[in-house]
Image 1 (cartoon, chains in turn orange, purple):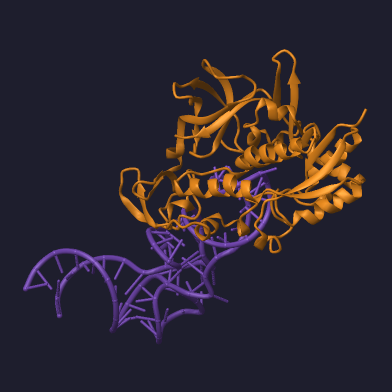
Image 2 (image 1 turned 30 degrees about the horizontal axis):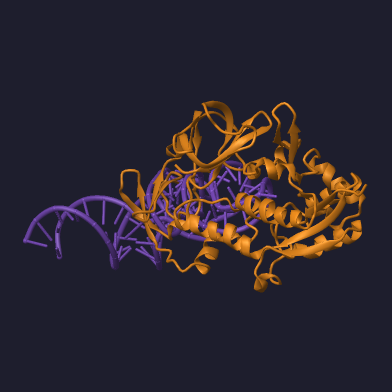
Length: 360
RNA sequence: UGGGAUGUAGCCAAGGGGUAAGGCACCAGACUUUGACUCUGGCAUUCCAAGGUUCGAAUCCUUGCAUCCCAG
């Protein structure tokens, strides 16, 4: 009987490297792959310290693969990445929304394009170094996505879009390991990446200057406009709506004696609305583009814990299905800076119920 | 040109003879697989200018200069 085959997405970081090692140990036939998502030109200039998908990571990943004795390939996913992540990212910002590119990348690139590729090659599974757990629940007859044992590193927030078919084909071997344990394993295996810092920031934007990136990569004009208060009074001039997001304080460049925050983006008038901190709180939101994992469909109101952004505390909320396929989320306590474009993810204890994109 | 007021960091602003508070902004770091939030640290050898009094002046005196308001 031949071994089951797994394609592991290797970013060159510790997590995916150790994930590969763990799969080997579990007896899978492991094939290492790094997704090439960057245009040719930038391949050389991109620094090694970049994000989860930075290209320079190829060298690191290749070295790890060599050490583990597994085949390694670089596969080209530039087109999907550009369409589904970069374009989406730019468009959303230009529309006054605040996108989450990591969620889009997971959804369309890693677990759609890469998974399809793997299956078409006769490979059984795709694996990643995400901190999350996938489990089949016999009672519910569904695959469930559950939080990593390392609460602090849990990445389920960015994975809520997975469907049953995808979940049945995905392995996340590191979900029940702690970060420290992962680093130890890397050390024991004598992997060079053992002490590589965790990735952060947007992987395709240099200097973390996303606004500059958008301006350089769009035909649309980014026009400056005015800061106004909630009553419509003029407060000053802003650099262009893409520079701002709800709840933002820094970078306004104006002094008021009190900290001021962005409380709204008025794309119609190209205004950025400013207010005090307590004006950033709100109690409900509408979410669209929903995906459910634990349940098939939201048919009646449900009590959940909801997360408004990647690093937010979960908050008690009730979700109500709406006629148009969307859902209204009503929080027990007001939440700070609910931001259109970001995702809400619903939990029941450590199980991901599902999630959606905040539209209002 | 008369009368009044004010000049302290990019903005606001304490201090009224004893060696420059604070807030906002800004910068740096921490946190973070998105954007943000948050946290920590930094940020006026100098108080419009020039003289003077004093052991000692942002603070008192003098003279300029600038700005604002009311008259003309």
